[in-house]
Image (cartoon, rainbow, N blue to C red; front, side, top):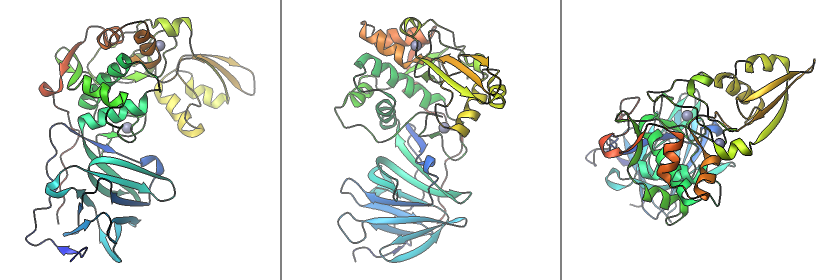
Amino acid sequence: MHWKWMSLLLAVPLTNSLANAGDVRVGVLGIFHPHQLTLSSAGGETIVVAASGETFFLQPGSPAASLQIRASGDSLLLSFAGKVIHAKEIHAAGRNQDATDFVLGVPGKIERRYRGTLDVSIADGVLVPVITMDLETAVASVVQAESLAGTPFEALKAQAVVTRSFFVAGAGRHAEFDFCDLTHCQFLREAPRPGSPAALAAEATRDMIVTFDDKPVAAMFTRSCGGRTLTPADIGIPSGGYPYFSVVCDYCYKNPVRWRRSVTSQDATILSDHREAGRLAVDRRLGWNAVPSNNFLEQDRGTEVVLEGVGQGHGVGLCQRGARAMAQEGADFRGIIDHYFPNTRLGHVAAHPPLRNHAERRLHP
Ligand SMILES: [Zn+2]
Ligand SMILES: [Zn+2]
């Protein structure tokens, strides 16, 4: 029978099984505003896809190895083994609704390999792929994407704990999923190879999070701080329950990353309160890193305003550059976290499972 469409009928219930308490829902590839996606198995296992009350199977190595998904008005157009079907959303998983390895691609732009289960829906004519993945897979993936090659292991471990804490406590910035895969939440691409430094850093700190007052902290981090970290209040964003402190970061203090930019006087007005909202508004329009940080001085030159600043990113929480330097000088990950998050303690995910900002969605065949 190979790859025929199969009716749901008496097959296994294809409702979206409830995610494990340790899973996070990550919206991926949104930066490409995809109108088309391809899905295929990456691990040699069959992928079970549920859509519009039907079930079909993507079998590696067969003519029906991949599924094309296209946006069509407010629904999805699925092409599979020469057939076309309309659906509002799809759910893809391994057999028994397990996590599985798959490749998701935006034709002509990108292909990435993920492990988890996949839901695709449509919003405003754009496909919205959401992966439900194991927390530890997500942590290792972010450590890999967020860290420079050669980062000392203790700094990677500190990043892993901070990243895990953010996943546990930081949901709520998106309606359709818990986290995006951009620096807006945390940068996430493919999972690292087993045995790679990022994977080992996640394993070495498994289950550990930053807590304050026995509650998980949605711990923030920044590329470099300019010499002193900022507090959320400094840049006009909510602190989420942890009273951040502005701490001196020795390495950046002695060698700040300096930058210089020219902006129009209109943009300078938007930036004048040194708040994150203004910086992001200008960056969204002019491009990532158009204004690297909120820590700058302005010089009005008539037709333009010159900004001279230090640091990269919002400047709050763990400074990645400072953490690397601390680790090089012998600090361990606990020392690094204590430095950037004073008055916190290490806690465990088991006692504080990830918060969710929306009810689990279920497919209704
Ligand atoms: Zn986000
Ligand atoms: Zn720093």
